[in-house]
Image (cartoon, rainbow, N blue to C red; front, side, top):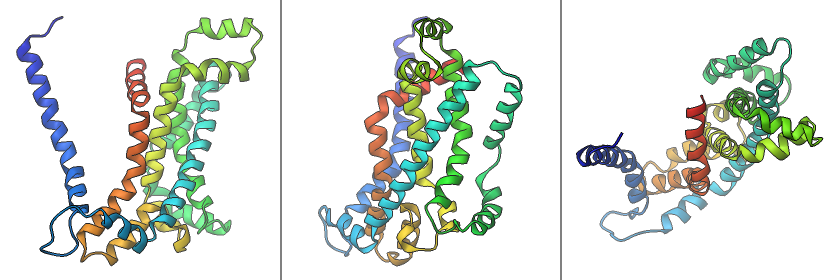
Length: 268
């Protein structure tokens, strides 16, 4: 069905309005980050980023966030793909029940388990370590990852799988050499989402981490906000530094990310 020129104009107008609403807060933070820290001085001050980097030790905080995020993403993707392949392509007794139990992880908010989780990890001697951030977030993300990738595997043409089997490929070769290359958009979407969730995680780091050397970027930003309350520009610059890795990753993978979301919504 063709749309009229007026309908297209109305659609674009609505999209532009909502885009401006979405971009305004980010633009406001960026403009604030480039303002002078002293009253009466104009111009663009890129040195605010360098000052926030050195004064707040964001080099150390970003490194900690990168270590945790990469470890969580890699572990989540591997475990999710293996579980989703089994649930999406294999037939075995209790498959539906096991998948339902796995999906329970999506219904439990992290805030509800963070306190008992702290005591469990403390008894194991894992608090104030990277493991106290990596292991819980892997456990939380695998439930979504398995659900997300299972949708792709379940919708894959059986003819492709059977052709691979006829060529002598086992489960391992079928998964890594046939199905995953075809499902790159779904995989990229999972990587971006898990990286974003892990990078922005604050509560778990606030509860588990006490050493300054292990603070992640969001936690470091919270401590820096107490020191830079008189300098809004430095605080805005620090906020931009914290958000920049996620933005860059999305911009680099946006084509596959959007395609994965669209394919997932259509198949779901």
